[in-house]
Length: 305
Length: 305
Image (cartoon, rainbow over all chains, first blue to last red; front, side, top):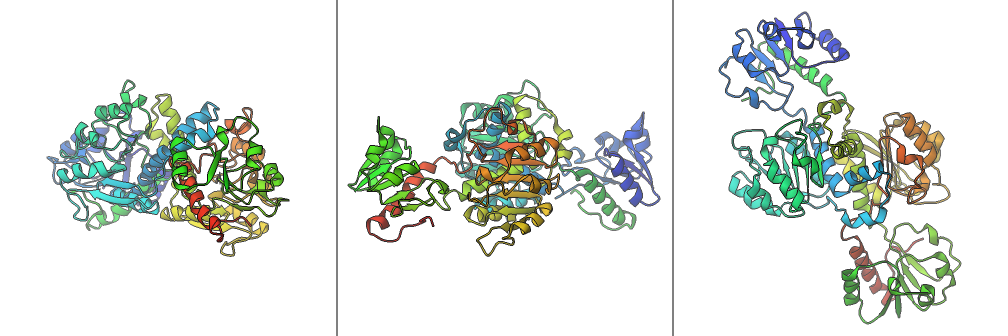
């Protein structure tokens, strides 16, 4: 059995992988100088995300352990004998912490204070009436999955009233788009953490943005396509919504001339929400843990539907 | 009975006060053109903080409702017949939210991301290994009062292990300075929210700063005198502690040439921690609520010891 390692590892992470993987041959993509697809096509297992075409053109591949939660590039593959597992749940704690951090930054003025420190400018007491409290806020979370539930856990400490929109999870309060439309005007904070599907693209369109209160903060910690980004930029510039915390945008890096760069009360966290020091080493551990059932021909964890 | 209003109110706050105060005469300090102490000396009640000397020189004054939690300027007054009540507990929610916001800002990179947005610079994935999670952190809180307990409540949602240092609250795990010294090297986050007293001045001195881990984040949400600020600046520049969130500093505004302005991983929140939109109106409500027992000669809320 040959394993193709598409995820980029630093030396101690490679050492850890090799030390724990047994006698299987591992090909590290970043050590190949040319034609990586040729090496890939000879492998049974892949750890990391590779182009969809490689998967479809491979005849040997049996399993991919993705290094992401999102699997939209691999939906409806022609090559249906390949098993694919994702990192479901892996990022819920860091992503939820980043989302709450972004919301608090806007409410407690931390983003503005960072800029003031950079300019060595003291404003002090005059800032106080512009601050808000998260305490008791009405929060609407789109996506009742691991990330959404982790956010709920954190927000409950702030006495927030949390409700969910989710088409598939029967525990969510709202499951139909019309119900979402009705819930939006009540929310102080709206957080998107939905996977991408044809139905989630621009679910937050200009019309739904217009229903938000001028005090609403909109967060996107899922997929950039959820929100009509140009309509959002206009609302932020108008002041018709209070702020935005965007971990994801439709294009990443965000193009230099994109209006979101100039929007007030906007945090662009540059798709860092899932990051933390031991992130990649922990991904190696997840792969190694899932390799055991693969070898033993037992059911894999977190197979995508 | 005459009431001296030293707290600065905007028009709707004055209206609210006058509408609810009954027939008592109110003198607003900000409407006086000269010699406010003369008007003050003719009043029975004061709402807001005035110079200590005014209190000591007054013969008529019976009660001051402070607009702060801190009452150190009024300790050991010669004029002992004056009752003084403070705003104990009033700021615990906003101050705790600001402290957690500051800690998360440093851990999740939000302060750096604010500066990157300002410069329209995309770094993205390269930031991820520099991020940390608050989840499971060991947090040492100096001061087991309303603010400390509110912080504990928020931090518990992040599965933090919280312990307290407090000389007077028997529920605190540590009460002696030697115990504090021993607890410091274990803490990932250390939060100061102690009132000022001779014993708290420079309680966090150079020696105790040297005991902190290079990953420790130090927060001060109490009084600026708690920390040796020059020693702290050196530790931050050295990288011998990971960061600081300072709502208070020994001098405010922080002098232009103070080294803290140039320290990395440092949030200076400019004593805004207790602020929020309805802050002053809520202070008026606290005063009005305490005025009733005063009029009825019943015990006042939150008298200072």
